Length: 370
Ligand SMILES: Cc1ncc(C[n+]2csc(CCOP(=O)(O)OP(=O)(O)O)c2C)c(N)n1
Ligand SMILES: [Mg+2]
Image (spheres, rainbow, N blue to C red):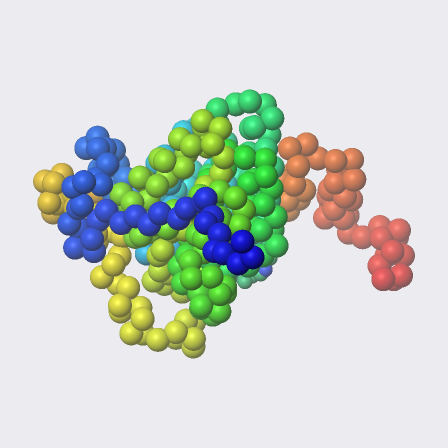
């Protein structure tokens, strides 16, 4: 047989359950309790309103650069719904909806975007890592955590997020390769929002799908409609179950769209067309989920109004807590390791000394040598 086409055993399945107008595919609809569905909607709406609030705070100079998640709420929340507190949750930086669902206080997330180290402190009882900006570095951390889970023979899994741009980094590839070889309990979600700042998806990889990269790593993948929370949940639950049962990792590519700016320091009008945004706006995950819940008679205008008011009050409270926070000038030394190293303790003491008494002669000498 000198020449033949090989059949590769791995597979990529695609899933959509809710169409943009909220019509559900009855055969695929997951059976979720009504209170869970409403809770998910409340979290999605909270995330959207949080986004609007932070955007406004940034424009008023009250927080630092902010990265909105508008349009991508389902593509993080749906997966967070599939894990429990013992599992590890490793975000990138567009997973606000999932973080709120996990129990991160709004004020903590605001403090993070305000540049405060304390904003990177996960709430007690959660196995979460904080927001991670060095693109794809979180994939390595998640790979290490899931390796530990495997070595310790726990039944826990790790859920990690990366963007479409992040999949071009070596860190992503190394993590996926290792996860495949060691069959780690890892669920790798790729939020494919079509852009990596100004680089469009087609310039990121020549693969027709990002999901299919899993084939080369030796495991299966899903490509889901990331604006359909039910599709995210179904794929997430299957991947988590497989990981818990020792079946190894899964890549889930969630097709979504960044409806807003990359960050408040960006102007997308310089590199993408308004028509493209207009095309995606009706596919908004919030509109779609709302229509589904209305058809199920779980959501009415009165409930929506009440929810919005509740969330507005929580946002006011969170803004007051975040703006009332006063950081010490040396606290950043304390957030690098669980316990400060001797070197960090020394540096902290030196800075405290400097702040109290000004530069010592030894400092002046060192500075003059630089
Ligand atoms: C290692 C590294 N390189 C570059 C950057 C600057 N940067 C921040 S976000 C980003 C694009 C990321 O695109 P993608 O992974 O698609 O995530 P998205 O912003 O679309 O959510 C870049 C290049 C960074 N934060 N880290
Ligand atoms: Mg992207």
